[in-house]
Length: 634
Ligand code: COA
Ligand code: AMP
Image 1 (spheres, helix red, strand yellow):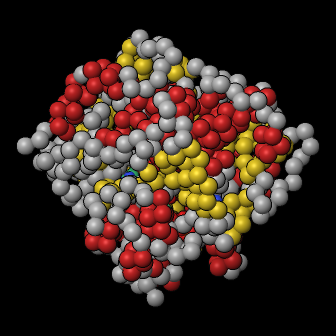
Image 2 (cartoon, rainbow, N blue to C red; image 1 turned 180 degrees about the vertical axis):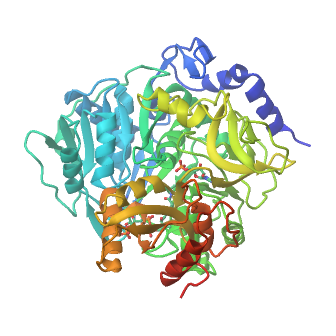
Image 3 (tube, protein in one colour; image 1 turned 135 degrees about the vertical axis):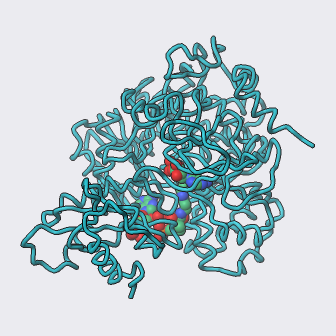
C-alpha cells in the first residue's frame, strides 16, 4: 500500500525546513535564504527570510532562460468579444517588461501600491506581473464591486497609480468601468497620482488631462524594465476580502513563500506538469484568479487559460467543453455554482457529446462545498475524477484536497478529502480542546501556517491577531465549522461568522446591514444567507421601519436593494428583502439569525427558550411567505 501522502504530510509538519527547503531550490533566487521557517517573532511567522528573488522572473523569464520561451504561457479566450489570443512565455514577458517600464516611468517603485480594477483581459495579468517585476504591490479589485467598495480599498492601500479599462462585458451587457473609477477616486481621501486606462474597442473612456493615461500610448514608447530583486518577505500583493464589517480585510501575500508553495501545488495538488494546459475559470479579482489563473501555472511553466465569459449564455452551456477541447485542457478549476448553472441549462449534458474531451483528466471545485448532486452529475457526464478542495483568500492555496500528484484517495461526497501537507488541521471546542473524530467544532490550523499564506493584514497587525489568532491561542481560526472523520477526511459545514458564499463569491452580511441601516426609513435590519439552488446562498434582508413610516413597503424595499447594488455592487446579488414589524431576539437582545434562516429555508427549528416573544416568529413566517420563502411560501 502506498503511503506517499502520509510520509509527505508528516515530514511537512515535523520538519518544515526539510520539506520546503528542497522545494524552494527548484525556484530561482538571487540570494539564498538564511532561514526556511523564521519563528523568531511569534505569532508572526515568516518564510525564507534573508532570501531575495523576483516573482515575475520566476513566472516568465525563468522559462525563457531555460529554453522554453516559445511554449504557450497564456491563452485568452473571450466569447463575449469573439476574441482569442495566445502568448508564448517570450511574448508575455516582453509585454510585461514594457508595462513595468511604463509603471516605472510614472514613478512607481518597489513597495509602492498599484490598484488594478479590470475585466478578464490579458492586460490585467500583464499589469499584475508588471508590478511584480519592479517590486510594486498590486491590489486587484473585482469588477463587480461598486465605486464605494473601490474607494474603501483606495483609502486603505493608498495606490500611486490605478490601472483600469474602459469597460467589462457581462454576457451581452457592457459595464463602463471608468465612471465607477472616477466616482471612487472622488469618494476617496487618498488620491492616486495617475491612472492608466486600457481602451477597449467597444467603449471609449473619457480621460482626464494630466491624470489619466492611455495604456496603448504609454506602451508604444515604453522602455522594457528588468526584474528587480525583492526580499522573500516583501509583499507581492494585497487582496481585500470580506470581513465581518464594511471594512474589508487587506490580506497580504509575500513573494518568496507564495512562489515556493504555489509552484509545488501545481504538481502535488493538481498533477500539472510543465507544458500542460491548465484552466481556472474564475476571475482575477478573487484569490483563485491570483493563484491559479496567473501565478501558479506560470511558475510551473504550464499554459494558463484566461476566459472572459460565463459557464452559460456565452453562448451556451457547452462553452466550458469547447474551451477544454479546443486547447486540450488537462485539468480545470471552478466553483460548483458554475456547474449548477450548466446542469440547469443542459441537465442531460447533451452538449458534452459535441466535444472531444480526451485530454481532460480532472475537474477541481472550490469556493463552496461541492454538493453531492453536482459532484455526481459532473462525474457521470465528464467521466473524470471530480475533486472538491477547501481554501480561503487568506490561505492562498488549498488547506484540504485530494492531492492528485501525491496519492489519490477515494472521494467521499461532501468532503474535500484530507489536509494538504503543510496544514495541521484540527477541530476544537470553544475552549480550544481537540474534539474526537466525527464531532463538529471550529476548524483551526496549528501555527505556523505553511508558506504562501497571509503573514498579516495590510498595515494592521492588530486586526490580524484579533481576527485570526486570538480566539484559539496557537492556532489560526479558519472561521469554518466542521469535523474530521476517523480516516482523516475533513468536512467543512458552515462559516462561524456572518460571511456568506454567493455563487462562490465571499460576501459579508454585516457590510450589507451597514448599508441598509442608512436608509432613512429603516430603524433596524438583518441580512442573512438563505439557500439558493443556483448560487448556493443568496442574501435576504429583513427591514424594520421607523415608527410612523406610511410609505409603500415595496418602494422602500426597491430603494434598499438599489442602495446595496450602488454601494457594494451587483456581485452582492442582494435582490430580496421584506418588511417585518420586529426582529426576533433573545432576551439579551441578540437577533435570532439562525432561527430566521431555518424558517426561510423551510428547515425544522425549535423556538429558542431565550426568545423574548415567540409570536414574532409567526409574523416572520407570514412575511417570508409573501416573498416566496419559508413554510407559507405562496
Ligand atoms: N463586473 C461587473 N459586474 C459583474 C462582474 C464583473 N466582473 N461579475 C459579476 N457581475 C455582476 C453580474 O452581471 C450580475 O449582475 P446583475 O445583477 O445585473 O445580473 C451580478 O454581478 C451577479 O453576478 P454573478 O454572481 O456572476 O451571477 P450571474 O447570475 O451573472 O451568474 C453564475 C451566475 C453561477 C453563472 C456565475 O456566478 C458564475 O459563473 N460563477 C462562477 C464561479 C466563480 O467564478 N467563482 C469565483 C471563485 S472560484
Ligand atoms: P474565499 O475567501 O472567497 O475563498 O472564501 C473562503 C470560504 O469559502 C471558506 O472559509 C469556506 O467557508 C468556503 N469554502 C471554500 N471552499 C470550500 C469547500 N471546498 N468546501 C466548503 N466550503 C468552502
